Length: 163
DNA sequence: GAATGGATTGTCT
DNA sequence: GACAATCCATTCA
Image 1 (cartoon, chains in turn green, cyan, purple):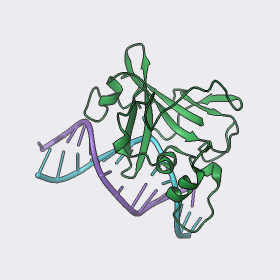
Image 2 (cartoon, chains in turn red, orange, green; image 1 turned 90 degrees about the horizontal axis):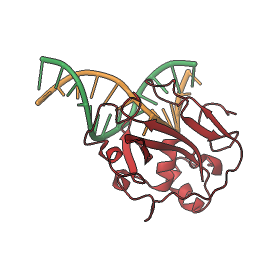
Image 3 (cartoon, chains in turn brown, yellow, purple; image 1 turned 90 degrees about the vertical axis):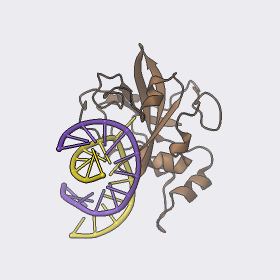
Image 4 (cartoon, protein in one colour; image 1 turned 30 degrees about the horizontal axis):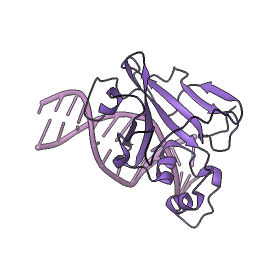
């Protein structure tokens, strides 16, 4: 279950990967909505986006955190680094962690999110109140309040619990 | 052809 | 609270 996400909308958004215009890397953003856009950042973390449609502009939603529901054993195995115990709520806490827990790599780029092994579905329910605020971890365009998360949820990323 | 910086995380002090 | 790890697309010469 997705508990945290950020929107990156259009070439006007300096933090959006589409800001420099169409390139080989951000090509999925210019394709049809409902497609996964995966890329590697900081040389070590894969981040997964859902390509959306925003009045004709290239746009995507970055999936930042999930609450694990199924396959927790497998996630534990993938995330396990040291011998330290791993909290269930931490398995998919943060955009880099969740791709690791789900085994998402660059191979999942451009996958159809409406079908197939990697998909997102609307279950029509929200577990808690949704808060909105500024996006995390970016330098440009940090003023846009395009991050949303479930208030107080244990799997929401960030240095401190946000409400 | 070479340099630069980023939508992060875990570890160390 | 600060910093290293590490790769690829873009930018500059």
